[in-house]
Every structure is written in structure tokens, then in C-alpha cells.
Length: 336
Figure: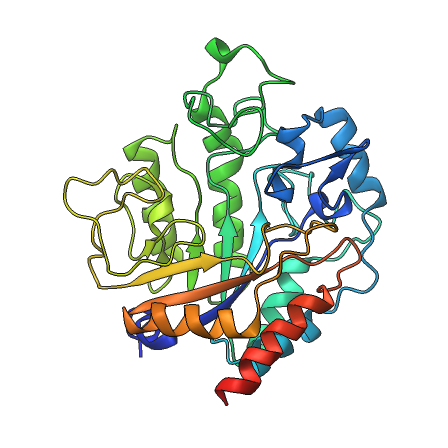
């Protein structure tokens, strides 16, 4: 069974947002983020020179890849998607392209992506990786600088360290960091069922197609989500926490917007959702959805042929919040 056939019947998956932002838990110097905790560097905003210090103390001694994947397996998930690099530019894998990564820059010194990939293989779950292909606040030429729409921070790009947008050229970041790191995750961690790209704005059509070609060259069966931008995808990622009553979209929809998508060429759709109000760990956010809500949303999405990718936000020590575990296990118990 190829990945298109598998994805169409997968139904349920787990996502995990975990990185340096988890250390802050949504709070910085007495201030709390408005919504998404993983956007805290932009929301505050925190200079790279300050944010880099968190790498020096990142040591999640309770991280256990086997425990995370066993939970997903027990709860009926068929695949697991992990944030290999989020918008802050910090890679959760050993990268030769940029030493700003969990192996080279932290006392933890372990390749998180490698350990999760091994655990997925061990427990029979498909493995996918999230990668922020445009926003990179650590790189002076990270994208997003041509977008003025609302976001969860002061700007899509790093306008606090690198304010002169006239001098920014995303192609530099794309060639120096994005492409090399995408190649790394495609060639170092075994078979990937998908790559989950995110928030395309500045990226050009040729750059989106170039990433598509790179994925298909090294892993022809690896699926690409619609947030790669410019229509270069295999399946549609609906908006964050989007639970539609029907599949919408069409030929005139904007393929670069998150909610505005064209129909999936292969009839493949997915909604990524949160268990509370944030993707990354936010210690004061107790707005947890119930087991019953998980079941209701999953059944609604699956009835429309849409997979439900449900996110966990582990804390800075690598622990999945108990409220998340209770809701997920409660939903699994009811549906068994």
C-alpha cells in the first residue's frame, strides 16, 4: 500500500510541538503570550542573543521517545508528526547545515528526531516531520517580511533583530539553510510518510516546486501538505482547528493561504487540532478539550474523509501534560 492509499484511511494521528519555546511555557519576564506559546520569541519579541541562551540550558531529562509513541499507539493513532524545526529556527535534530540545533547547542545533546523515528519504527507508527520552510527568526533573511497580515507575534519575520526589510532576500536563507536541512531530514531518518510544511507567504512558486522535487527525489512516496505553498502539494492541510461541515475550496482559491486551498488532487485532507489553546507548552492554559470532544471531532472529520491530527505540547523536561494524556486515553477507552 502506498502512502496515498494509507493516508486516505489513516484517520487519526498525533502531532507534537516541542522546542526551545517549551522552556518558557508561554511566559517571558512577567508577560504572557496572547495565544500560541511557540510564537513567544516574536510575541515578546526576544532578541536572538537572548533566545539563544535557552539552548544552553535545554536539558529535558524526562524525554522518552518510546513513552510518547506508545501513548499515540495506545490511543489509536496511525502516524506521528514532529516539529523538526519551528519558526524560531532551532532544529530538533543534528544538522550539518546549522549548528543551532539540539545536538550541538544544548547540554541534552541527543537527536530528538532520530529517537522518535526509531520509536515509531519499533511500535509500527508512520513517521512524519513538520518543517517551517519559510519563517526562520534566527536567520537574517528568513521569510515573512512581505506579509502584513495578522499573526501571533509582532511580525511574521524577525523585525526586531533585522529591521531593514529592504535588505532581506529569502533566497539566501532558502539556499543556505532551508534546502540543506530538508535534504537532511529526508536522508537521515528513514522512511517518512509526510513532510508538514507551514505558513507560505514569501516563498516563490519556483522555490515551492524545488522543495517538492527535493522530497520526491529522495523519498518518492513521501506526501507533502498544502502549506508548502503555490499548489505544490499532495494533500490539503485545513486551517488550524478547522472542523468543516463539508469540504470546500476550488480552482480559484489562494493556494498560499492556510484556509484557502484547492481541492486535493488525490482526495486527501487533514485537520490539525490542539488539546487546549496552544500548540507549544503553555503552563497556564487549562482550556483542555474533553475526551467526548475529541471523539466528536474525530468522527465528524473522518465522516468527511478528513484525518484528525491531534497535537500535544510537551513541557521543557519532555513530559506530556497529564491533562492531555487523560483526555486522549479517555477518548480511546470510549471508542474501543
